[in-house]
Amino acid sequence: MDASKNLSGSLTALLKALQDASKNTGNYDKQMVLLAEVKKTKPDFQRLLQISEIAKAHVDNGELRDLLLLNSGKLRDSLQNLDKAISSVADLDNQVQFEKAMGVFDNVILDLENASFSATNGDLHPIPGRTRQNEIERLGAEVRVLASCRQSGGRSQTRSFLT
Image (cartoon, rainbow, N blue to C red):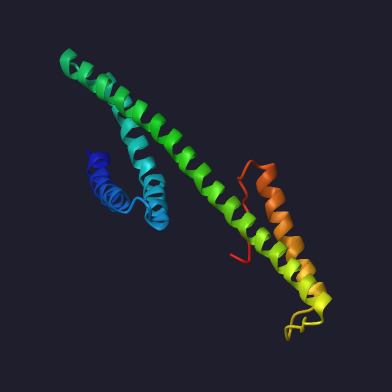
């Protein structure tokens, strides 16, 4: 009983996050809040499943035991589907990170082309506090982020300092 009572608060928070994400389907932040809420409440659902598995051995009424078995099976299937959904959303998040890193990389290339053109025309003026060496190091860091994203199929654990 305590598990189902504890689950009530978690379920309320999960439903609120789901409603917010449904109303704002294009809002990346709301989608990530929903993902975080799902990850936070999932252990409560798993605990409820474990308790129902234990409880079935103590139910004498065959009809109630069958109902408990049916519902615990549905919960188990739902948790497996939830795991798949979490993985899919996490992959989308990694894809967004990869696309951001590619955007930064494209901007660096554009900046380098503009600088080359400006240098050719004698219009290039140094930015105070920024050296060629510092910029090469920053570019190297971004290339490492891209490489790690590419090697892991978009699953980079590092965050770019330019985003």
